[in-house]
Amino acid sequence: MRIASVTPLRLRGLPTLPRLSCAETGLLLGVATLLALALFGPGLPASQHQHDFADQRTLWGIPCALDVLSNLAFALAGAWGWWELRRVPPGALDATSRALAALFFGGLLCTAAGSALYHWQPQDAGLLWDRLGMVLPFAGLLGLAAASRVSARAGVAAAGTVLLAGPMAVWVWVHTGNLLPWAVVQLGGLLVVLVLACLPRRVDGLALHLGVVVVLYALAKLLEAADHSVFEATGGWVSGHSLKHVLAAGAAWPVLTALGSLVALRHSDAAVMPSGQNGAHAVGVARRSGA
Image 1 (cartoon, rainbow, N blue to C red):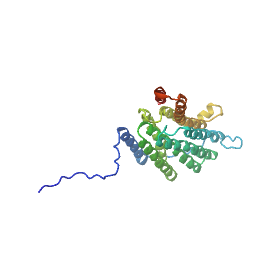
Image 2: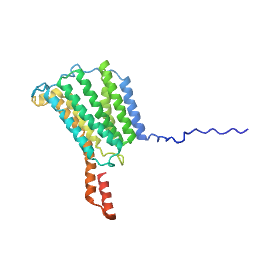
Image 3: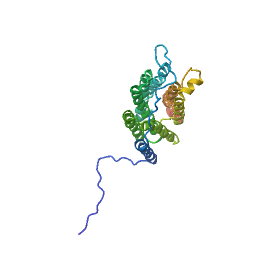
Image 4: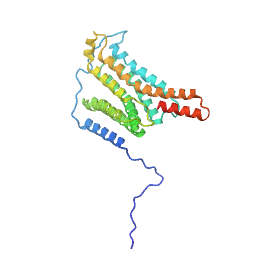
């Protein structure tokens, strides 16, 4: 009696997902490590002076005026980004990166509103909306970084992780006072972007200068920590927290310039007016120079 050989069953007609690349595996392990730190790390209580900002001046009837008005930098960057994104021609940017860029710039607008609301009357209730608004640009930026350096699906996964982890971290802070999960979302995300900056850009990835993003955001956090010192050093002219808003909004600049290069490439292609083989060659040169 012959026993039939046992072979693995395969579901016909269903697409199989490609295996994780080395970069995707490393990104997954890094995120898992940060998640473990957020869940099992030591509690981090919020500072008792977290609402004690240096610049308390009321100008034009606006309390804490410069801390409120400096959020216009986020609104400007978000609106500019939406305008620039609409100018990018179809096909010049993959659908995943386009959606992540829209999330990033829309998140900047939400950040501007939430942060201005909070600084108008600094208290925990306003800080809740401030932090929830910040989750959106964090997710968009981390997703763009992963999509440009690893893969499109890594970008979606990274953005989705932040969109889930961010509100949960805020919820933990509200109900327990533990700030560690939120710190992991902020600083851990920055660390991931720093690591991604060391990887080569994908051929079809958005040309993001991630190192510039890291430097600007790191300087913004330093200014936030030196809020009172900067206010004293400038003779009460501007505080570190107000400057922090401007520099943090400036972290959108690499995304704006990357999109602007795609728009410029469209105009250069249109100006070539290809005719025959020489024209096609000129278009190809223009495309390669913009990559």
